[in-house]
Amino acid sequence: MLVVVALGGNALLRRGEPLTAENQHRNVRIAAEALAPIALEHDLVISHGNGPQVGLLALQGAAYKPDEAYPLDILDAETEGMIGYMIEQELGNLLPGERRCATLLTQIEVDPQDPAFKDPTKPIGPVYSKEDALRLAGERGWTIAPDGELYRRVVPSPRPKSIFELGVIELLISQGIIVICAGGGGIPTVRLEEGRLIGVEAVIDKDLASSLLARELKADAFIMLTDVDAIWKEWGEPHAKAIRRISPENLHGIPFAAGSMRPKVEAAIEFVEATGGIAGIGRMEDAEAILRGEAGTVIARDVSDVAFWD
Amino acid sequence: MLVVVALGGNALLRRGEPLTAENQHRNVRIAAEALAPIALEHDLVISHGNGPQVGLLALQGAAYKPDEAYPLDILDAETEGMIGYMIEQELGNLLPGERRCATLLTQIEVDPQDPAFKDPTKPIGPVYSKEDALRLAGERGWTIAPDGELYRRVVPSPRPKSIFELGVIELLISQGIIVICAGGGGIPTVRLEEGRLIGVEAVIDKDLASSLLARELKADAFIMLTDVDAIWKEWGEPHAKAIRRISPENLHGIPFAAGSMRPKVEAAIEFVEATGGIAGIGRMEDAEAILRGEAGTVIARDVSDVAFWD
Image (cartoon, rainbow over all chains, first blue to last red; front, side, top):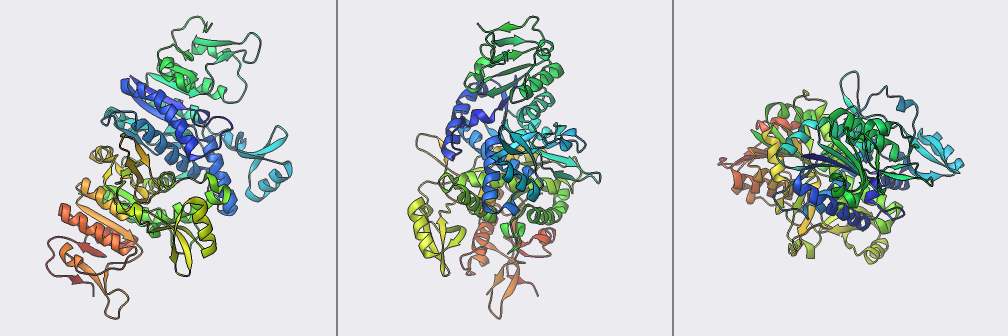
């Protein structure tokens, strides 16, 4: 069985923790412990978020020489290297030597006509006062948007269209190699009319990119791991209930606010409708249990009625 | 024929140029133009330096929060992502679609008993006044060393012992995929007695790591590209002569000052003596000509007398 697992940025950094190398290594080790049992049983592809890390690199660059700060495609490539390295090393430490891992840099094509380029919505980096935000918008050509009482930079989040390294990923899987790829949603690129591929200032949603990856690989299961235990119906309400099993059709009918759960739900539906495989959403430490249907929310075609956890 | 090419950090950034994304893309494009004809004829593995890039990341981290600055293994991983991405994209733009590239994160094992750990010699990052250097050494546990009138941080440069991803690299080559790997000399790691692999604060010489890679892959040719046109005998003297062809035995007899040429010469000798393949050293734009013996210095077993360029 081929399993694609997407590790949420929040699963790699507990909320409020400083983004030190030690903290990240410790959290990646916890993730590796959750994934090792899956790696021993199944073919495995791992993608991961990078929100806090890209935010930090952007801050570091701005603190040094703002005019020479790197664009988002390069920052994503840096985090693919950094986070991929930690996952490969920590997971490798838990597996027998013959179970090899490979971390592969991943470029993903987006459509230059994607409406997201005209309507940037993805917040990135720190919050600023209105005054600072307006100044930075003028100096650097940023789009800014309110975030509570303050302001943040927002960037386009176009939909992923195709994954350039797909053939290489398939080859590695076919040889029993665990592949770490598509970190941070992959490096966003567009094909110019003349044929050249170039990077763009955008961030592809990690769950949508991972869903595309799982679909193209025809994975049997696609698991998104985060810091929430399941999809909840009427989240925050007195009658809120955690969903145990649901079909894509029934999931379509449940409203979700924008934020981190909506792209996960969309990513799950796209995967299950296209492949007939199962999708799962839940906590990092429940990874193996989710795959067995014993934790989290499982989305599958053959579920007639919605089942809830007690 | 399998060719391993090591791109020097100086070949990716002209001396004195600011380390902007634009400058690096332009230089990587020049490198890609030099490598594309080789990629069309031969199997190709590309490694690269990262000195200026690691220096910049270290500066950016220090400018933001010095106490949370990342160790060198993580910085190397970031640059493998960043530089690998630019090489993969620019080279991919010059090749037909079916000639695929893969950028692979590379961990390299070093010996924790390597004498380099007791005698750090590799300068990294900016120069400091003696006062600042002494303060930083105290605060961060750095070793510092004089650099002209000023001081720099120096770190251990242990010898590379083995390349963890070697089997994956071989697999990719066997399928006709161009592999970009071992950037910046690879991520330095040591195996603890308990068996765990961890990263270490060190920098592996890029040419020695590339030589190990070329030997382990049993490459036919190993080319180191830099901003010098050849190995020169009596460099800087009135009778200096550029070497055209030389055997490892004769090369042993020529003295080289420490610096960037000595590790290249050592890397070339190690490769040729171990494999019987040919090694080449010269300028980026001469890559293909060096492979044909029409530029640069070629080191090969079967050369009886040293041949010089006119």
